[in-house]
Length: 132
Image (cartoon, rainbow, N blue to C red):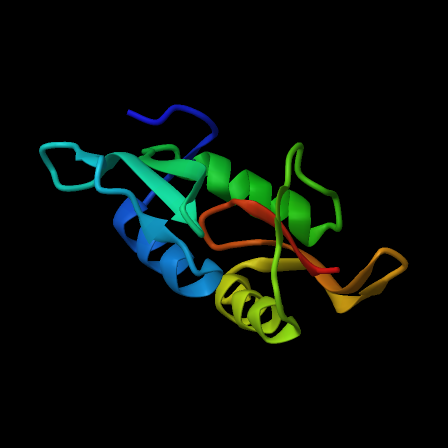
């Protein structure tokens, strides 16, 4: 089993589907499910490289707290950064991940990238998406 960063998320099945579509990830064959069908360990890969795993969480209060904090333009403790190959990939990820989430910094240019954004998705995960 692949170990590394794990995102504990309420509605892990929906999260895995969203991350596959928005971030171009694939679900590893070595996933494990709880008896209720949610993910105990859902390894997510990008271009064959392990990025993180998703695990079902029952802590809905944590998601609310992260989103409330982000809506006050206060950055969460950690952000998961992804560098994309094209501007269109960043725009697609932004569009999908920002639905029901909180945009901390809208899509725009920074001195070190072509386009980037900071946002918290509907599952309470903070993302820094960019294209150098």
